[in-house]
Image 1 (spheres, helix red, strand yellow):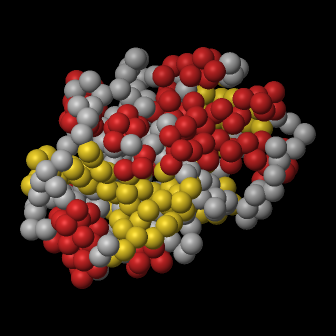
Image 2 (spheres, rainbow, N blue to C red; image 1 turned 60 degrees about the vertical axis):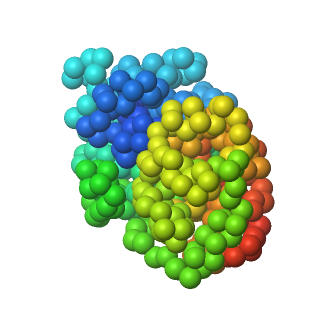
Length: 385
């Protein structure tokens, strides 16, 4: 499908913006999502991150503001942030119960924007927000998601906020970019909180086709090379001592390591190992921060999400920028079997921590534990290449 923007090269690019302001708020509270638990997460003192992520995306569009006609959802759903950044915009719709926002607001405003003839709808959220958009728009409307949720299985999202902004900028400048139909995936968050990943195909939306910027649909399922993990686990056990603690991110690979050690970890949570024992299961960001801020010798062990390659920023927001910096970038290790590395087909690991500077610092070659005392170097990037 050819880029329809070429038809409008003599007019300003018509860009819509909708933000789910509470997207991802449950991530740092280890609540496995935000649907139905946002109030609980806020009560725990978690600060919403959606606006900071959208700000990262829009930074690429600031030099092009004179070429853009911006249509924004009202208040915290878009217009407030645009005004703060110096953009002029037209407000579309109204909140049904201000200052609260709802899924119904997202759906109504998305439909109104599309009816007004926007070239691209930028929306920030997670899979729930993508479902809301899909409910109202057909495949002729071009959209692009700014990832701000906890678990993002849909293929309509950019690999991170900066990538979303850069891709939008290419469209504004009239670059001829092909389009593709991308899956919107639905996840059962209640089952997810109970350690089960259940997704289904919910629909399709049209997104810009540019492999460096748009993520692949997450591959579910648990496929563990048991013998390899046993070897890696043996190596880790030999390295353990009373003074070194291990913070293990979520995933079937890291869970397999704990099982090989005879420990009962969590598939979807962050676990903490010290002196051969689990001292925290399914830890929150605040619990991790309280541990590492006291000093000591800590290691963070993460694995890549199958099919996407993200090692940070997808389902492990508990590993926040302040936690990572306190542990030390040199102490962030990746574990991946050769099968998992091959599944990436040469694509780099991706990082999307919400801190652009940290993402840049993490980019480059990083140690990967792939066998018994076996390490490989593998590239890490904030943008797929």
